Amino acid sequence: EPEVTQTPSHQVTQMGQEVILRCVPISNHLYFYWYRQILGQKVEFLVSFYNNEISEKSEIFDDQFSVERPDGSNFTLKIRSTKLEDSAMYFCASRGMGDNTNYGYTFGSGTRLTVV
Amino acid sequence: AQKVTQAQTEISVVEKEDVTLDCVYETRDTTYYLFWYKQPPSGELVFLIRRNSFDEQNEISGRYSWNFQKSTSSFNFTITASQVVDSAVYFCALQNYGQNFVFGPGTRLSVLP
Image 1 (tube, each protein chain N blue to C red):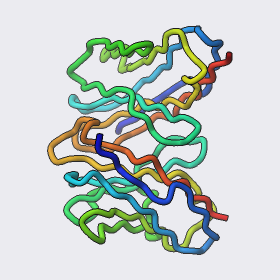
Image 2 (cartoon, chains in turn yellow, red):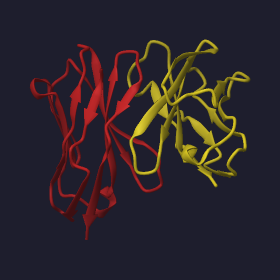
Image 3 (cartoon, rainbow over the protein chains, first blue to last red):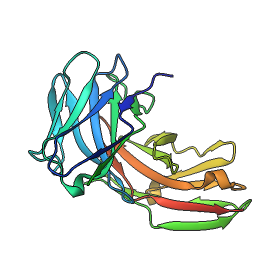
Image 4 (spheres, helix red, strand yellow):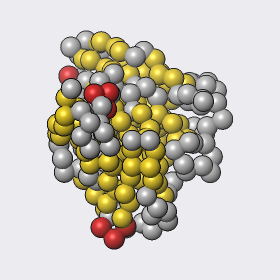
């Protein structure tokens, strides 16, 4: 079964540093998402991306965050100047065109970001 | 506004007991999808089931079963004869058509040997 791949699985960074989280969505998918889960809390929507632009973002997704699809396969989340409270598990997800079932909406296994 | 409530923060059961995890949702849409995900200690989200708003049939998959009742806006999940490997955090989630997931706060299930 096709997978969404996230790298790295765990990243430790110093406060104030920039970090880029990488995702390879399923190849024929067109909608891309980032979600965040602070330890012990629920999974929260950050941003959705379609046709090379942000289609929706939550209030969490402030100016410190940006997303990019630099080539035909990668989808990245950049945090410009990390804060301690950015420590969380970040999930990437992708979805196919016109398919609103989970079988078109697939989550990656997550990147655990630790800011020290 | 969409919202998912999982009133049980933590549940502990002894192996082989049955356990039901509750989920109550709120949405104004008539077309929506409900999901259950399992999150083991390793952290990934494991898809368990999807249900669309027009299908109120209960579903059974092995030891797992789901009870969807639109009248009470509930989508409860039962594990029969629980096992230690069922220990995890379980999330109920709502997705309105074409929109993003709204997750509940999760229920931590501990199955003791």
